[in-house]
Amino acid sequence: MDEKDITKDAAKWYVIHTYSGYENKVKDTMEAMVANRKMEDLILDIRVPMENYVETKDGLSKAKERKMFPSYVLVKMIMNDETWYLVRNTRGVTGFVGPASKPVPLSEEEVLLLGVTDNKELFGNYEIGETVRVISGPFNELVGIIDSFNYEKGKVKVSISMFGRDTLVELDFNQIIKA
Image 1 (cartoon, rainbow, N blue to C red):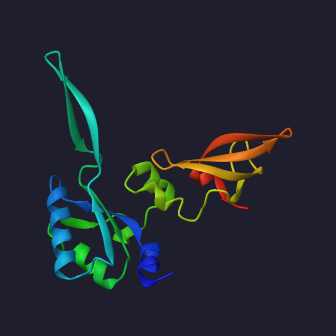
Image 2 (tube, helix red, strand yellow):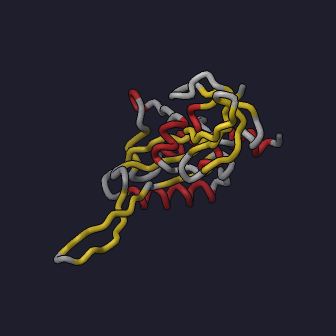
């Protein structure tokens, strides 16, 4: 594993609070600062999560887009003094989300629910054909073999032997661990 892989593994998603309406400006400013200071290996991704919705007005439906979390920006970064300083001193940023503005990274489950990451990252430790154990749900404690991944949904298909037959079941990524 080279140094860039180690860097990506150490990076976590953090939530930054901004002034209302400054989300995109903060994102653009931070991206420029990261490029100018050559910190691309420390601050990997900056996002303003958006969602699509349909607005009906005067009988006409129109597809639109809006911010999922007004006044918040998500940043995938390695937390150190330099990255903390860059984020905190970006115009429009009021601070990190966390107790007493102490940055707290999002859990993998929160990242998946927010839909801000390529779900391939979540399955990076697993391979097709690998043996896993189910840790929750109706198939709890059963052992199976990974058949396929559905990255868009954050699901994995596992072949489990039940009643003498192999059965393919679809599980969430957080329902399995390596056996």
